[in-house]
Image 1 (tube, rainbow, N blue to C red):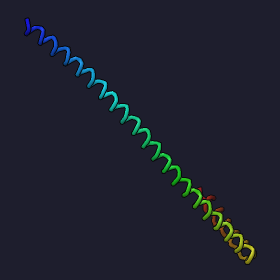
Image 2 (image 1 turned 180 degrees about the horizontal axis):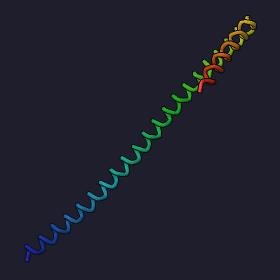
Image 3 (image 1 turned 90 degrees about the vertical axis):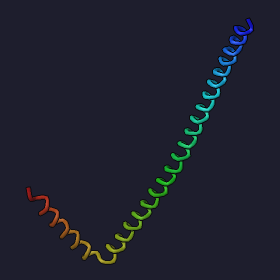
Length: 98
């Protein structure tokens, strides 16, 4: 009779161990999920910040270029008009070819 009772205790202990293991695995999976979310948010923030910096740099460079062109046009308005006219003629000929 001890054999049957001992086997029952072993099975019960095994069930408890499996239940604990299931809880531990669930906790580990939840922890990994939370860590993944945190790292994803962190990466997203870094990327967003980097893109914002790059956009601002491109915007500043574009403004500098426009300012430089305005200065050149003010300094030499006739030459600028002639260049614009020649470019217009060239583009007109280019798009006229069908």
